[in-house]
Image 1 (cartoon, rainbow, N blue to C red):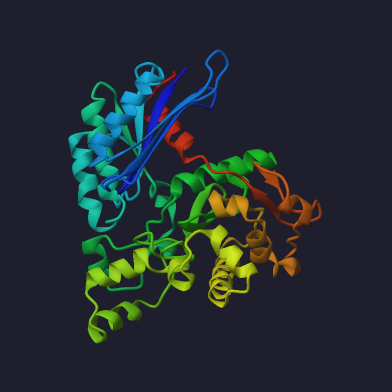
Image 2 (cartoon, rainbow, N blue to C red):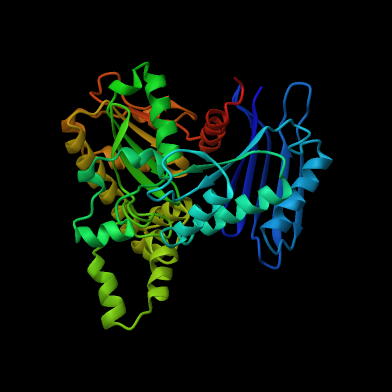
Length: 403
């Protein structure tokens, strides 16, 4: 058996999961939220397995930094006999959002790799610093295990030049490595491979559109197993409408706000990263709250929802044109997996293209499933993503575990 601890470190959160990759089973799970605030919350759970009843510990306390948070997780995990050493963990995998031009594949963490991730903080200022903080804390507190960095941008390294090139001065783009990198790549690769398995189709013969729709949202076009386009760009701001990010907008808007309206670059960054998207349009970043307000006739919520659907349709249609032929459209992540109305509305104009949803299958059921009719020219699916399992598998491959 190969057992891997997967860590996803955010700016004020820490999510951990111990997985047995041989049987794709979760052994333990932990989440710390509100790190750095006066009071944070922590939950540690040992999973309910044959011969080992599940058990959970929770705590509310101040976690001033990630070191304190991980230390407390390990302490509570020890009380549940779920410490990484108790469960025979062989490696630790870390999600890193931006790999830039240097990191295309998962890689074992060394001081040189840490330095490379740190250099990319300008490209992902909300994510890479937190990801690196998690790596450093884990290497400090769990020093006897190999650590592997898995990059969100890696899957999109295959984008053709026409898709990843920005139409700006080539010298400027080259000097600063300005191009489309794409994000959520671990999810897009996992879901697209699983889609092919569900359909019983060879991965390298299937053209797909994958829609990862959560608080962060992205779309990808995958031709014969290779990503050929994706909605996020140099940073995770581009593309679809998200919980707090706007997706596509005219870059002249940014120039106008700074030059003509007196906003600082920091003000604009806050606007685009934290006060846009659903939050900016309707003051509701949670999709459940948004839909409740739509049903109540709230004009701001209705407009926000309409903008989301309009943008989705634009990307689906555009990617269809790029691929030429589409075998599958797959919805994943929190909103994509759970909001039937959004799936139906996003595809409602594609009947003339041969897309036919089965209303009952779309509205009911859970887990991975086909939600189109047998007569649909394109198969539409819901496939839950599992980025943690994908990261754990990457650790197996990089380190040669389980061989």
